Amino acid sequence: MKENVLDVLMFLFENYLYDEPEDAPDRDSLEENLHQAGFTNGEIEKAFAWLDGLAEQRHQPDLFQDNHRPVRVYVDSEIARLDTECRDFLMYLENTGILDAQRRELVLDRVLALETDEITLEDMKWVVLMVLFNQPGQEANFAWMEDLMFDTEQEYRH
Image (tube, rainbow, N blue to C red; front, side, top):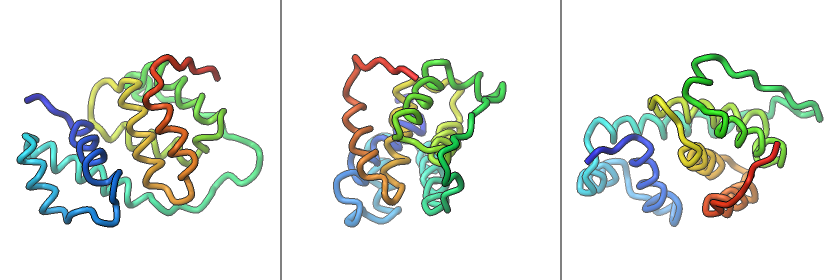
């Protein structure tokens, strides 16, 4: 079974975090369930480290409080892993108000932490969904993103 960190994260999100976050089992139980589902120790550890990184950034002060949105310039290493479709999607989410600059940077941090050579648009959508789910006060944006997840015919205009 060829799995990656995002597969483990999606499994956790769909089976434990999404439905009843307050009743989520402890880490040992989750690890046991992930082993039973066929995931390897390495991928499980990486997934928990990814979630720890997300949790560390849960509460951050708002940095940009005026109407001026900073422009994001991607460095070569980011461009190599995030194709134009992914970058356009992030810009679309910013222009529609789903992501602000801080949350965009958090999404970028978490997507680049996946340690895969190439990030697909589907990967990006899942990371955005998980980040919004984890951010206080983002329930409406999470719901909008959740609806978007299953709309495969959407065209993104920035």
